[in-house]
Image (tube, rainbow, N blue to C red; front, side, top):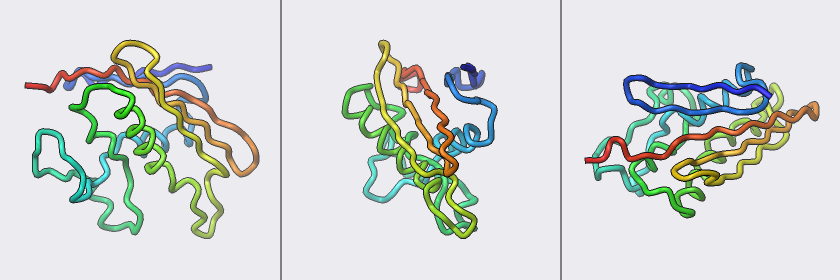
Length: 150
């Protein structure tokens, strides 16, 4: 088992990745998918009631958008409902791995479960089964604080 800690000093936030090969290609693609901001829909409630729908500029050049809507939960209290939304957003963000665009799908299955293992900590357990049957499993944990709250 490997453990990686990704920390952003400017924002004082960090993510802990446990299990699997945290430096592998699949793990990297999962992290990019989860932590790139997907564009919000007009029906989504934006943090601070802002008008910033965010989104990755590269979506302009690609039919299927990248990223997740996890950023929409940044100002929410960590509840079971928020955990369930986080799981849904993660599943949506990783769905592209199951699509075959002519070169074969990257994964045969992707499963995401969420938990609140410790006070103010959200954990997403991700299990990816590759087409050859290899299983990659890891957990992404984030301390849940409203540091940007006013």
